[in-house]
Image (tube, rainbow, N blue to C red; front, side, top):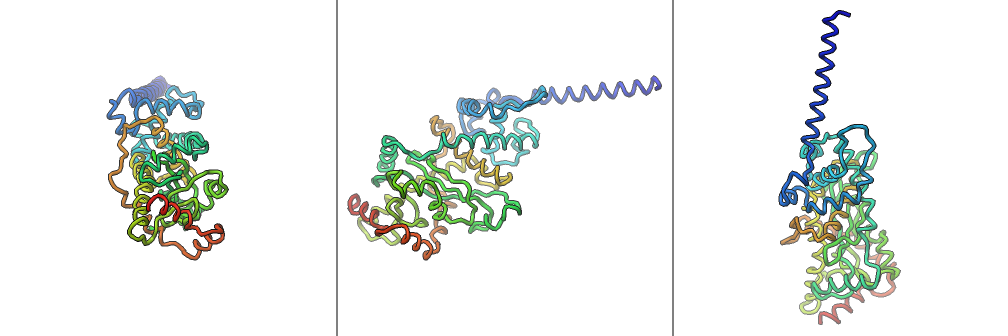
Length: 366
């Protein structure tokens, strides 16, 4: 081999090493920890929680996010957590989100999947119906303080989250009444707007009442394992454990009951509104495979409760008025198959399904 050719090869190798070292140095410099980089207010705006909450969250899932790698610039768990939260909060495409802390799109995709699975695994810790007598009493007292309706353990409703559906998943099943593919998410919240139940598995074409009667909470209420009743809109059948508004109330006690019902049930709509604003990914099409989209939705519910449990008020999720989209969904949900629902009510309840509601009205609103 000539001296000239050896010199050329040597120079190429040096240049490649310099380029590689430069890229590694660049990545190390640009992949700065946002907790150190941003002020408290700027961090709040980008990550929808305080720095303390972010660090606590990282400690809960850190072991599940550590990847075995020989690379010197492996992505630390805290950076993975913040990258995923930034994606949830912004609702942006993965590439846009990853640019905030300089992570490649393939890495961002892996991080989103791992983080969503890690957070979703905490569901039993952060989302549960009240069971002990003391906890049930606290929840009931919270609801009664809103507008005077007693014995309420939750406000229930459904909301649609847009998802990407592949042909193998039968897209027609996921098309809702607004003609887009979605998951119909059932939620039950308490008076503090904390998720007590979250069902994230039903296609968008499924009606709220069907989701409810196939849920564990329905069985628990029916069998008396949970002592109390829920508040739901007119899309649900009225029963001894689910109070609905009166379709055409008369002036006096019935109208007073309806006003109290609306004010109290509004808590679940306000929760949906705040939840989707805090995690904007829920307001746009989730660009993941269906299984991971479900994990993302569950993870956002857990994060909502996690932040609430820490009394983290860094992000304003108050709602001045009912969300218009939820109002439209509610109106559409009332257009149900009355024969189907009436048959369901007749088969399940021996006595008049309106008896408990009538008792509440005559006892507390007369």
